[in-house]
Image (cartoon, rainbow, N blue to C red; front, side, top):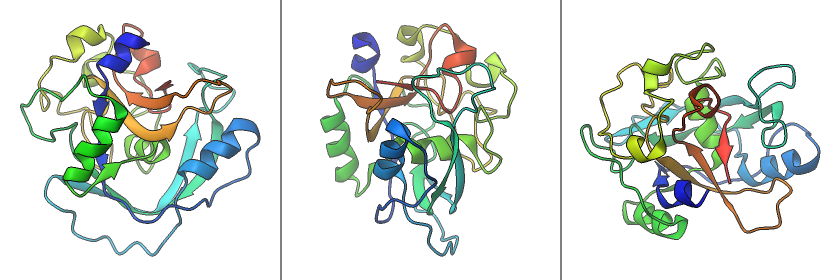
Length: 222
């Protein structure tokens, strides 16, 4: 986990005010929704700023249903419906430029500062998951069936962290957000909160040899 954290990439999102508005899951799932859900507001579909994608208000089916595989039972919500308001997210990993090597080896504090310098912020892990799953709440950004070549998953993170963005055209959600998997892990603003006492943040996306598992939109790392 230290290696993954050292290679963690930041992801940016410019969003509205945050409050809870979701279902009623129990345990750490309830705390996760309380932290990360945002209000459902009127979705006017504004024109996104350059390089950003508008994610409309809607319902995220957070995590993975208990009867679905693969699933990491003690780390994922059980397919709970969470209502989220609309927000923006960068189209590509930071620095959000086609052909650039994603920025890595940054702490979450550094990631937050880099976001703020651009007038943005880190998105929460649920915002990240909705942008990945798209309007159909798919398991992977490109659909429900795993396809290694779509995002180039299934390789070691050391190799993945050196890849330029923009090469995997099919690696995108139906919202148009691209390459959320296949490269370095991405910081979110969320705390892990899954029964651990350590002060851990949540990473999303990324890559690993177990591509079918790590390439899912619901996957996370503390």
